[in-house]
Length: 372
Image 1 (tube, rainbow, N blue to C red):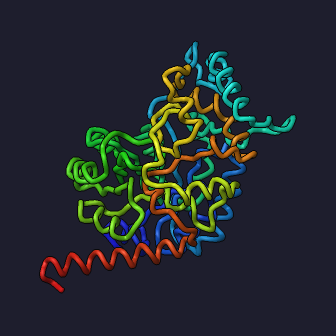
Image 2: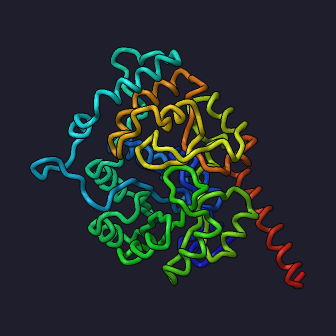
């Protein structure tokens, strides 16, 4: 499963694996793919440095990258100050806080212990936090910087290029992809409607060729609804130079979800058991449908807040739900490919299945084309 892009980056398979787990990212690189560590959950630079140190020791010299969530424009508070976490907290309405507590009380979710911090408090989408992550990351030999919110600020793109680091940005439409190309992005990730996390409205089968045509000759990675070798072959047939996989790694043996109940829910879920909801971050993000997402999507509720308010509002609640494994509320971002994630495999096992499926698809197409 090689393409010009995979050869440029020195990887055996054109499979780019995004994951929040360092052990999974390292295993992806060792298996011949390109592991990309998600940085959004790192609030302290030392924690990111610790895990990048660990990856350096466990990728066996193979290349890897980092994914950040960074807005192209800086959010500002009154007086042109950089927006701080305290500024955001002060914007959250009391009615929304009451709604969170009422929903948790309805389901009997215990409080965290006194002094226990939320383990899910994501502030990595705030520019000053993301820039701190980059200050750490650029001290390591990362080969790719990906941004989940589109093109990062121009100075970040320039800084990455000065370090010899390629920059990738996710796009949900050809229009977004053209903006990325104009901003000097090196790789566009065409993220279809089926994908986990923040997605647009266009399905992968339609989006991938639209984006490849829009930004040619820039390389494009296909994302969304891909979890088999046959689907990898389809993505490459549509013009992509690789695939960007995220959801499929959630149930590998190297993953650390901290919840067997959540793993069981993922393994049992079908492709119709996800929903695009603003419940988690304030932007539409595909995730398991739960009574938590239903509560936020109910027209009788207060409605979600815009990013970044919603993420801070629900952070402690999500930590409580996960810690106490309250199954009706327990969920995670995941794509429609969850319907194929019905057994636990190692990362290497996933790659073995991908390569077998890819070879089978290529053989079948060659036979149809009269070449085999």
